[in-house]
Length: 53
Image (tube, rainbow, N blue to C red; front, top):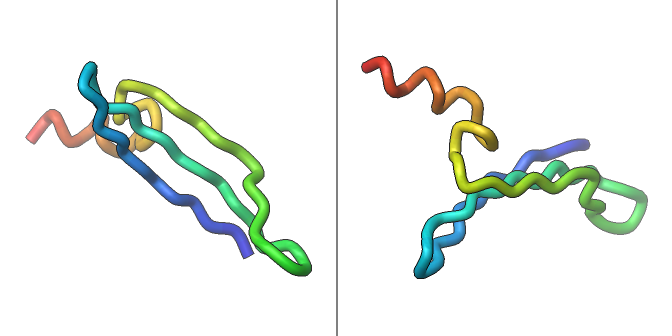
């Protein structure tokens, strides 16, 4: 089983967006990939299309 978690962290100097790809191992969850960026569309590509509305 695999899951993707999206996260936004608000700091004084701006927001940082993150995604974590995790999978279920025998005994626990394991992080397979982490990605951080200040642009939300870099983490969640479908947001790039929202600006046209």
